[in-house]
Image 1: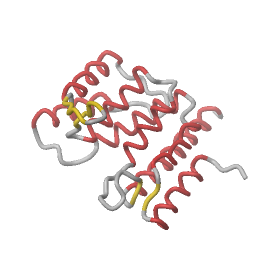
Image 2: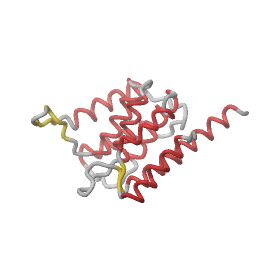
Image 3: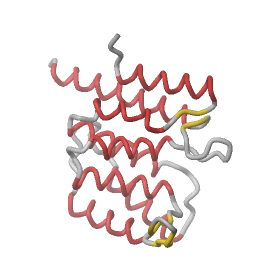
Length: 185
């Protein structure tokens, strides 16, 4: 039986509801849907938009980066977004340097992330600038967006992940509807 990517994502939600958690690798099903570069860039920019819409950034360097990201993303088309490449690259560099702290662990250096939402914006811009044909990068971005740390389950998909996966399903449906609408004048 062939299921759509959205149906597979809904099965992940049901698994979270039934078992309390699911493995983030189950989101690899998204790679199939993200194989089209226009979908991948639209998805990346949508995630970035979700990340910058979060409340709680009152001041300082992080708030300035959030504001800069909001300005970059404002008014972009859902499917064929045309980013200002130079502005996006400068913002990506600033985001990267903002969280450029590493600690050496037994297995090697580990990047210390102080603001997860800024990391999501950085990853999204990286996809749009350099990894537009890499559904794997899109999957990683989705996993980072959906993953929720809970000491009982670790970094799995759990309670709050359900709403984010549902948001992804709604986004996918909206993009597919726009694609159909554009094909049929």
